[in-house]
Length: 242
Image (cartoon, rainbow, N blue to C red; front, side):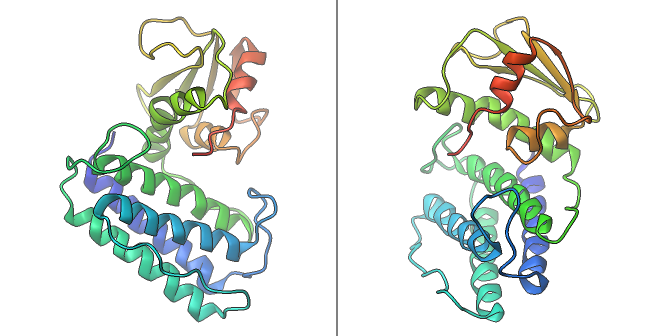
């Protein structure tokens, strides 16, 4: 995991970038990476997640209503930024090692520091995609996101039956972050026990991260696949919805 200060820095940066889209973007524009959603649906989703995460950290109320259909831009901006600012203040004031309600390890505030920084990063990318080319994701943050998938989401999807356990290890090698190699174990066995990779996906950390979160197809030319390509595609296209 990254230091708490790095997560807070990224969360603030990504919240500000998302808020800029809320201020200036077409609120009715479809979100290409979230089929069936327009920008207002994306704002409602992320703003609600921020309030839920704060509730999990501090038991604060989360029942602030989402703006209704036809709400004007000023209402959306105020609603989104107030929830995001309060979340950031809550996370900054909390001891990262305090226990709290989470849906994965570690069961402390550190989980939400990481999860909200990464969640907001993905949805900032989604929001900017409504108007053209999204800004890049910083390599260290994306590389940490690969570890989060290995540590939180693959075990969760296996436990919930959303991912079928099969022998196989997909090695993710981020070419722009020295030493960043993550083995995604889809067999249900504990990760990091010396299994040899069945397949390897190599490329920039941000591309690997976006492929895992279904924002970029696995056949992008920016990703190099070797070994068992069928197994690589199975893991890369597996659902990660919390």
